[in-house]
Amino acid sequence: MTGSSPEIRMGDLEPIDRRSTAAIVADRIRAAIMRGTFPPGTQLGEVELAARLGVSRGPLREAMQRLVAEGLLRSERHRGLFVRDLDAADVRDVYTARTAVERAAALLLLAEPDRGPAVARLTAAITAMEAAAAAGDAVALADADHDFHAELVAASGSPRLHRMSRTLLVETRMCLAALQQTAPPSEDLLAEHRTLRDALATGDAELMTRVLEAHMADAVNRILDVATPPALPA
Amino acid sequence: MTGSSPEIRMGDLEPIDRRSTAAIVADRIRAAIMRGTFPPGTQLGEVELAARLGVSRGPLREAMQRLVAEGLLRSERHRGLFVRDLDAADVRDVYTARTAVERAAALLLLAEPDRGPAVARLTAAITAMEAAAAAGDAVALADADHDFHAELVAASGSPRLHRMSRTLLVETRMCLAALQQTAPPSEDLLAEHRTLRDALATGDAELMTRVLEAHMADAVNRILDVATPPALPA
DNA sequence: GCCGGGCAGGTTGTCGACAATCGTACAAGC
DNA sequence: GCTTGTACGATTGTCGACAACCTGCCCGGC
Image (cartoon, rainbow over all chains, first blue to last red; front, side, top):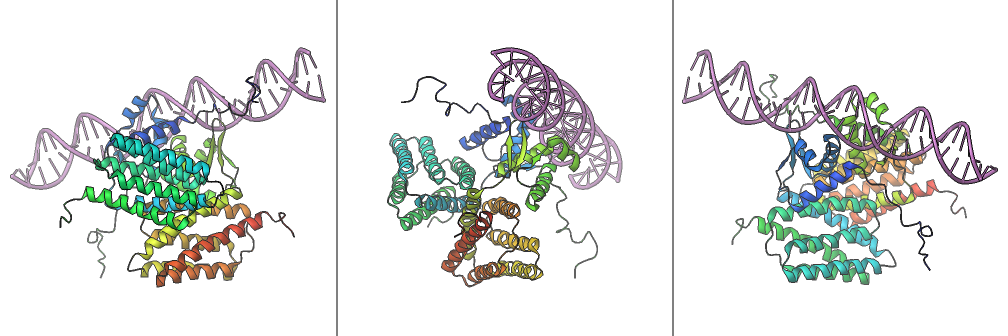
């Protein structure tokens, strides 16, 4: 029934309004930090970055302000901008905040009558995780894990939870990239994600919150155990 | 016992590194928005603001980027910056996010053995609320309410929850300022805050979460009922 | 050998000006 | 009367350059 003439369907050809340069630059730098291109502690020179991105220092500084506000960068007056390095306390804090945000998002999602699309997206993310795990691709596994949690929060329909989650997930990737996780126990990881999805599908709030909190606690232990093996060898 | 000589006590004459002007400007604008100086929908011209604050457009734009990232301002390309106006969905979303953040903060606080200082600060905030309620000062009451929740999250010791809470509390003030709440039912309000403090003092997690969620839900209803009286007059 | 002053290098912080873009008002045409 | 085209005003987006600042190193003096 949809007309093939372009002027009939005008509803979905709209957004030519490109975002501001600062927003684009911020996304680019954020992605680079997330990928590990800029390891924690790296100093980011403004002139070099501006030249590499092909913009002036003005928009670049605006983008940097956003990243500093998000907590990804640390600014020292007349010294420079540095990629924040996260210690053990930061790892715990990131996962504490993530637990709070994702728990709220999941409960919000459970209140909706039709959770079919959300469950489908989560299932897709799990499928991607399984493929990555089978292929032994740690980066793809982390990507799929990232997508799973991003979709979970996005499906809640809360703009603020979504905004918070975005920053927290980037920090999560920073933790993982910094620790160079080599052999993730993907079996437990996959099982936990499947349980989360099933709990959402069936509407079991109690199970969902319990598994979610356990999932986050497991992640913290996994990261910190790898990071500090000489702590308690007993 | 504190020496009167300035060079004796060097421990607390601390960092003179004033923050960047962009941060100062951002705080100033944020406070102005919170106070209601700039009502929602107001367009903020860069040249006028820069002239009024005595800074150039560069630092001001950097500050604006932070506020846009926080969701307090809305930026339209080549149009200008506007103070975001919050609708009913935004009010619900703000309180949803606040519930998530403050619940997590409270649970974190409950895990600490010594909650004395935190309880003391919350009690001080409640005292301020009582004084404001007795004096009929709605602004002071809102300030004290703000302080109570800010202290609650700050006492948790989580930098990320604290950062999120700061933005959310500003948005809360925007909701209240926009709706010009004239006669707040301060009795229930005070009782809820006292119960929250007591639950934290005694370590009753179940009571705390229940009262907190009820407190947030009450606030939403209070705001939306006042905002939309002609909905159901029956 | 040790300490203080001074200098150079590089970085950020700030400013003013130019160019691109958008909204609006007005006039012309159908 | 309604639509269309155009000119104007105002605002933002961007750029380059100057000034202030901090750090580290070198040198002279003790």
